[in-house]
Length: 613
Image 1 (tube, helix red, strand yellow):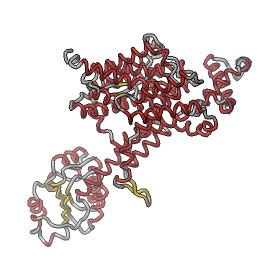
Image 2 (spheres, rainbow, N blue to C red):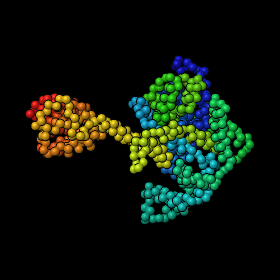
Image 3 (cartoon, rainbow, N blue to C red):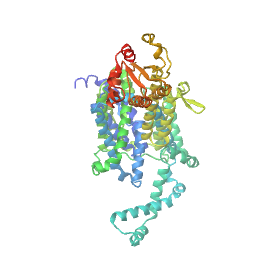
Image 4 (cartoon, rainbow, N blue to C red):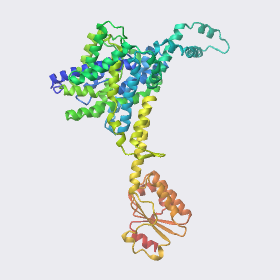
């Protein structure tokens, strides 16, 4: 407790400054996620406070981040679509996923997985971060142009036939659930269908239109219509925001340029009485627990979301621990990774209970906190409290912020979050794999695959596929490098010093083979060719194994196949100086003694030669 209050002045200034920086981003991320600005604020408040209180990085400021918001946006859109486009109906399931993600993070910390996060390959992280930037840019182009697909009457009209079919399908599903035999009596179906109103069809059409234009691919499809329906006022507000954010940084970096842009552009819009679109209303009261989250909290209901929640928790873990490393470098301290994961998990769990979006350690806010004097956990807690005070006192004022201004802020976030370091390195990375006539770097391939799959398909699966490809590439490289040191290829080779006196009359019947290096999956194909090199005139093969330190399962079965082949050809095999690990492996599947009796295993070459003579 004494340590917590050892730097009150610095922590207070650092926390307040970080909170000011977090405010516009929290609002923007909340709107972008689909749950509204209040969800962004709630996430920033609770994650910042509890992750700081229970976490393992003293100067870390946590809250909604671009990667976590991008994944949350996908999760929210998917669950809302599965609930007929009704957000209120989908909210319990959405918050359940967020709560599970937090609980999984606590579990990851408790079982000690925090220290292994650093083994995720850089190309996977690079491709993912660049994809996050691209997704944010593409999804914010439409609101910055003032185009909202649900309000485009002509666009919505295209989905009316599909909306009518969907409504009728839902009626049939309801009747099936009620046990009505629709095949025998269509009267009730016709009666219900007759009650469908134009408003219902329009609402369903709007949901389908919004779904069609959602995500990066949907935004690209809708872009031509957006260009034809530009709201110039909204576009000017967004461009003005972007201009101030980048321009004000050239004047000073002591005052957050995003906050300056938010205040200036919102002030212009309100002061001149412009007709602009505002963000959703922000509640001004104390946040309350969303008890409906527990209404469907059963194993059968949460099972479909377990994988999604686990992925979200892993992403948050990576995001947070990378920021922890940045904080360590700046403060010359050492964070506790597992404790940090527990803190992040508690913060995300509490935020979910109050309807907040999930988050992680935020690099920019953490750097701002450190530079402003923050040194202990108190700074992160003060940042959360500061946001709570702003929400309670300025909620109605914040509700008047133009949506286009937040879109402009997010565009700058999207530009900033991309991994330019990784992109710049593409031309200089070694091209170590071939595709027909083309050569490409394996690192670049992984980065591009993750980037494209994340942007246009699925963020969750993209990371998994990237990890699998990276692991396979790594295995191949290590295999190739080890195979270069492993010699199991040629039959004719230089004799060792103790073989120079080998009897001349036996050289045509007895072949001596040296195996140098491990016999593993990377060298099995060369080893399998060994048996084919031995002529049928041979009667004995002496295998000198003193330098074969290791044998994996692939090597074990390659050895078994070779011995089987030689046995069918009546060629006897003798082992010299067989080491402990390979012997153990061969004894497990009875190569010893079925193919190689123990009396055919010799400690030295001289013993073996004496036996042959």
